[in-house]
Length: 278
Ligand SMILES: Cc1ncc(COP(=O)(O)O)c(C=O)c1O
Image 1 (cartoon, rainbow, N blue to C red):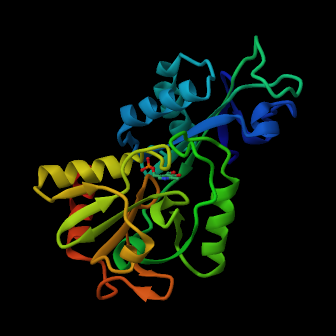
Image 2: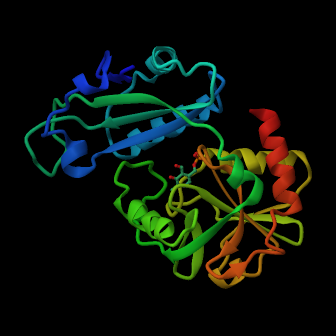
């Protein structure tokens, strides 16, 4: 069965889709995106994702206001691709559109809107056993708060993780842990959950937000503060979070085990509460 995608107002088989070579998404990576998880056909934190999309669009000055159209588009994509009864994801990308290549933002340009649905099961083994990560210098730009499609640094760094047999790459800027290539990073020390504060240096992760809400509700102390790579090696527990990775325990950083090299008690508690919500 061929995959049905959505492109600029039309549902069509993926192989029939055509995008202009002048599209600024292709030429300049001039666009933003979102990934939303659907648990058995039901979106998780839909409004948070749409709010973040609206903010990304505003920050890069792409004018696209009709965000209300997406709920039905996404449902139809899940139906057309027979994904309503399983865990799945929606990928949505909006680029500035196509126009002769100029560096400034052209007038009278129509954004390109592309969305597709895909199976997104939980990575059960990772969730259970935890993963190993590597660390690398955070070589990304200074607007990591925008969910931009310009992900070459992220892919270069993640590729190094894959080549080292690791599940993620934790990023270090000026000696401090920011986040990972496609997930947020949270640590536990003496019962307190610690994570980088929201700033231009990290994406405001929605799973991160959910975890902090769970902590507050359950009287787990939270510190949104910087911590150094040195501190990272001394944490009691470590986890990454994201729409795809949910809450994945980290049991080894480079060659150093985290705690007793088993997912920690607070990580397990947060996973339990998280999966009760979805
Ligand atoms: C750089 C980065 N940080 C964090 C996250 C986690 O964000 P969320 O929990 O909203 O999926 C992502 C997800 O793609 C990401 O790319």
